[in-house]
Length: 198
Ligand SMILES: [Zn+2]
Image 1 (cartoon, rainbow, N blue to C red):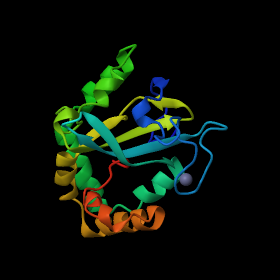
Image 2 (image 1 turned 60 degrees about the vertical axis):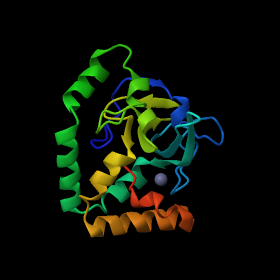
Image 3 (image 1 turned 90 degrees about the horizontal axis):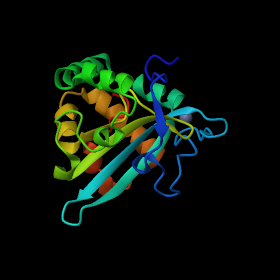
Image 4 (image 1 turned 45 degrees about the horizontal axis):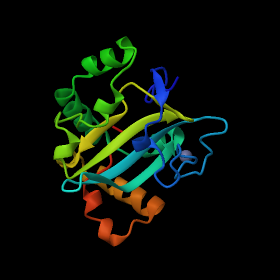
């Protein structure tokens, strides 16, 4: 049992939105260490940044990857104590975790689509948002339900990023620079930081 990423929730088939958009299948490898996530099945996080074209009603995946829990733990360990506390306070003030957990554990068919279409922080539909991020916990070809999956709108992420220390933001910039070699035109996008480690 992993304390940070508990794997004992209900499981469902991975929805399209959480699959690797290049293959149409569940992600096969950790983006950082290349660990094989599917044979045998291993737990991992998926993160995606999605831009919504409101006029056409289309979603464009700007960025999507899977990361094994060891690598996710390494990244999480670089977040400063102050930032972690600020993140936890921000989320606990804004999210009714008890209601989320009750829903996941007490309903036979938790409403995964709703979790993937509503900002966890603001409660707004992502149809109203220009950009949003999703985070999901998976194992092999299953989506594990619990705190994840969730969606956070760019509005809420901007608010949250304002609470993080410069040290933490610097580590995150290094992480994305080293591991993803992001092109400069994406720099603006990543001023709004990713959320999978929350
Ligand atoms: Zn890894």
